[in-house]
Figure 1 (cartoon, rainbow, N blue to C red):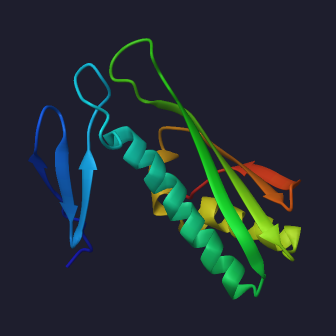
Figure 2 (cartoon, one colour):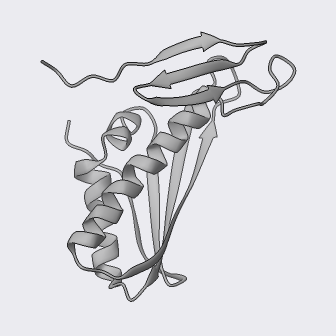
Length: 151
């Protein structure tokens, strides 16, 4: 049997929905004037999923490499097309900010592996949207690249 993800959404009020996935619940909404901005929008959740997927890969790899990470922050910015509907993603940029006694080459290797082999969300999004990434260790740039997954 294939691995699958199932969700259920229930309209609460206005444009807000209670989303359930397994034991987890989350309120989603849209911006005013249609909604009340009481939760992230579906596209914002996709961007959070992109950041979360690659962040977990990188954290796991740095742990495997025995790199003493003190702080790890992932910042993601996605530009959307606004000329016509649908407003799809045009470009994505992910910044990885790592603090600690971390080898810059190991940090770059972990991010590169995530963005070329492991991150399923990046693999899906990169088919339609270029993803660029930058890696910083203790405030200094250690490298950058573009998500590139095999076909």
